[in-house]
Image (cartoon, helix red, strand yellow):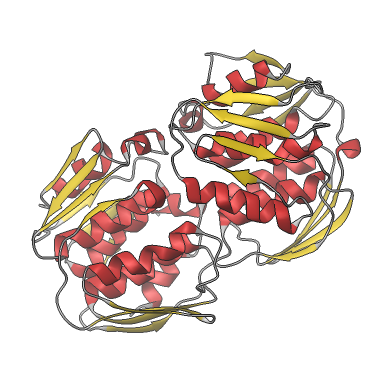
Length: 422
């Protein structure tokens, strides 16, 4: 599709929405399964571009990977990695490119990690710098700190401490945490700046524990990973909390009730707490051992919120904010300018096209109650912008979303979900 014309909903919602498995959990579990000796079976694996890129890379590395619908079987082990030169294709997947770059340091190499042009623009320097400090040979392509990059081990097995920044992306730290057990003494990470997106580090530690490496210690500036080896196992991926934010936010915008089964109060994902943000805005929320339900029957109100731990959901909340009274002030998220798009400037510029009063600042954005009008909104190669603009269209007429297929990065069936709300 070149564009998607979002038809507004004319009545309150009453829907049960099943969202795909978490891509954040899945990519961490896929790395653990790839490094574990033996056969792992992962269930409810999502089929977005990020996950498919990871599976492609693991196959190129020489692992046996089979996919049957939502189930992935991997016969893993570092000893199975093919000797290079090989090119690992990461498409548009920032998460995959960072994780697989670290994994490549354990293999015989050389391995070249590369993606499509938009991914080449995304920053990778903190990870590349850290790998150099670990004794890995890092050879740049066009520009230091960007893809393509060629990785060739071996790592320095005597190393036990690594310093890196924490304020650009938690994915750099996660990438190194995932390979840390394969060092004789594990690794101790010293963060030179405050860590952003800390809930994603907790996901990493939780998945590592499920695959046989417990005992990760998460301090404010020091993260310690013990030595060990991942164990092959059967593992079920929980529903994606980031994806769930869109149907739950639709209930806030349009009124009525939306339930997401399986996204429970025991979720390891920080984004599962987004329902409580909607509660602050006036929704009724029930989250228990069976799932999450959001209901709105009254009016919405704007809030002030630090979203440093919910940064992927800034566009979701920005889409709800025009329908709430007063002002919604989002801060603590200046680092999301380095995502698939500049998720502050690009987001606000497109919202203003629809007549929404949205202004970004160095640390976040401010959205005031507005009456959106007809507009065609660009997605800037960003799945989260596309899905958030769809929410605006559910509450206002005349919203057209460009490049709607960009949602395939995380939720290929997103537009079918939007239609199912009717």
